[in-house]
Image (tube, rainbow, N blue to C red):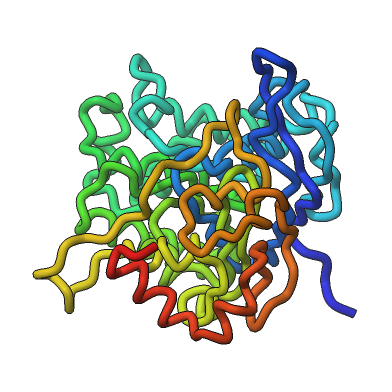
Length: 340
C-alpha cells in the first residue's frame, strides 16, 4: 500500500472582492506532492501560482477561500483554526518569499529574526543553543563569517545573501515541506544557479518536499520531477518534467518553452507569446488562452476545457490530440517563427 502524499490539493478555489461580486483568482486546481520530491508550478505573472499557495497556508483573508481541500500529512489545512496553522507554518512548512528585502524586518538583525523563528516553535531551547543553531544555519547556506553576519541588518546583505538568509530561516525548524515562491527573482544568473544548487542539495539531504513557484521553465528544468503549468487561475497542463518539455500538448506550454533563451540560438531574436494574460476582473469566456492562441477554434471561445489525459500529460485543450498528431515539435516551431 503506497504512502499518502505529503501535500494533496483538490479543487481549491480562491476569490477576491470585485465590483460585481467575488472574482475567482484560483479556479479549482489539483496538485499533489510526495515527500522528498520537487513540484514545479509554472506560469506568467497573474496566473494564480502564489495566490494558490497563500490560500492553502491561510495567508489570505478567511473569506478568500471559496471551496476545496488542501491536505498536508493527512491534515486538512483549509478551515484549520489560525492557532493550529501558525504552529505548522515555520515548523513543518517553511516558506521562501519572493522578495527577501521586504520579507525581513528592516530594524532587526538577521540573526535575531532567525532566532525568533527558532524560539517561537521550540520554547525549551536555551538562548545559547538557539544562537548556535542560527550560526549553523547561516553556515549551511554558505554565508561567510556567520558570527559577524548574524549581527548585520537586511540592508547590509547583498540580494543573494538575503535570499540565502531567507532559506536559512525557512529551514530553521527542519520542515518537511518547503514552498519557494520565485526564489531567484532579481538575482543575476550566477547567483541564481548557486541558489538553485543550494535548494536542490538541501532538499536532497533533508528529504524535504518542495513546491517551486516560478515563471521560468528553465528554473525547474533540472529541479522538478513533476511540473504543473498554470494560466488564468487554472492548471492547464501537468506531467513529469520530461513529458512537459518533450511531449507537451498545450499551446501555452509550447509558447513558454519556445520563449526560453537558448545558447545555440544567440543570434536570433527572442520569442514571446503575443498579448497579455487575462485580468481576473475581465476573464474571457471559454478557454482563457484562446485570445492569444492562433490555434483557437470557435468552440475554444465558448468552452473552458477540463484537464484530461492526452498522450503523456494531462492537458486542458480541445485541440490537444491534433497537436500530438502534428507533433509537438512542429507546434513549438510555429511559436519560434512567431506564427502563434
